[in-house]
Length: 327
Image (cartoon, rainbow, N blue to C red; front, side, top):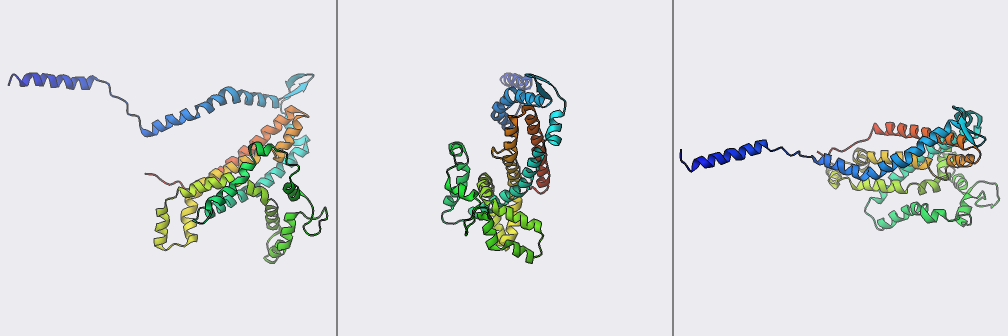
């Protein structure tokens, strides 16, 4: 063997042994990096939940099992819950009324926002202006504008008044009811042999159209974001295959937008139940001055009802939600 080659061979063996002995660096996948970054973003919320909100929640639950006697709190078991459910009949009546209103308004808000989003997603003149106009109620209902005194608002007073459109006599039908009467919706559905339940449902929807449009702004933006995320190549393929607009909607648009329907449904349920002007929230706030412990029990009953409805909505809509595979 050549003498010059021997040192090279020894050097190569040393380098190889050094590579074997050196520890291997762990390769972190992209998904794990994203997960760690996500924890960094939610860390302030987690800290606030554990150190601020969790003690308040524990104290709130403990108040529902206590009663105040001579400036001291004593154990009361489930008496506060019994009083809220069985002794105070007004709370149960207000709660059921809020649930009925939710059954009517929430589907209307979701489908109206979806319908408007599909229209505003089309190419037309003034599309940006129409989007801004439909989002204006969301801006008007938040912040400083919402805190202004609206008792002198002529429009709100007119919309909430009981004056008739034609006669102007107080105590007659409201403006929305006059519109329904003029359209003869009841006569139309009676000729179609439709039950009175559907007539009452549509009548209430028309009467509450002002609030429904005001509450559809955020959902409209979410649906617009979902519609714009659909690849135009999919629609081009549908046009090449000769699919109609109706077929394209049910076989392409609706499945692709179904995750947004789930998100908007849950958001609408929570938003409608946690509004300050909600009938149940207003009743609980007024009852708090009378008995804070019973009012706290009412709040937790209301929370459990809302949580159950959210879970029910999630289970029902989850069955037809379509998630597009990225791989």
